[in-house]
Image (tube, rainbow, N blue to C red; front, side, top):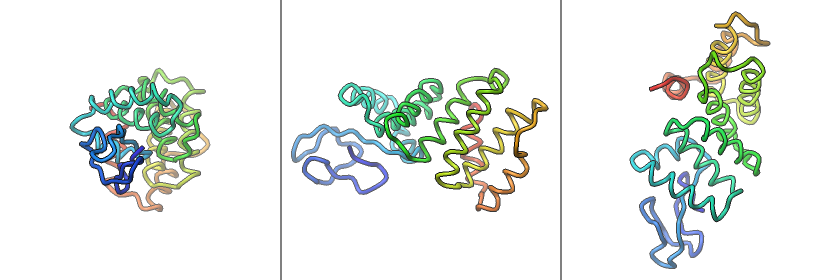
Length: 194
């Protein structure tokens, strides 16, 4: 597997490769690009998401429990707004050993986006926020905190339900961690329909 987040080399012979390469020009090995970072997958698949979807699905046939392939496929599905499938693949990546906070965080967002907010029952809403809390426990990212504040607002406060923390308190934590307008824009785009 080759990571889009670092220098790209063929895992077979170590030769330099690019995102456009389907096979290593030196050893002939088939290449599949994976990453456990949503932004890296989003950037890599921006113009060719359908090709990447097919490549990840094909790679899963050979390695059905590979957490990197599952996560990359989940990220690509999330970016393509196929939320239920994205949640399934990201959760499968976690079940198969992915312990990356970005995978955990985006699994929660995909589950949230898979339904209209008013269709999400209280137990599921709590589970979504608890999943975000797991990601926050791994790394207290301002984006994760901002998303949690938005989710608490939508899933609890707008329904006139109490949650153990208020969205205002969580937002203050996000700001204390260095929340930027760019962070807010990224999360807002993931939480709302285009």
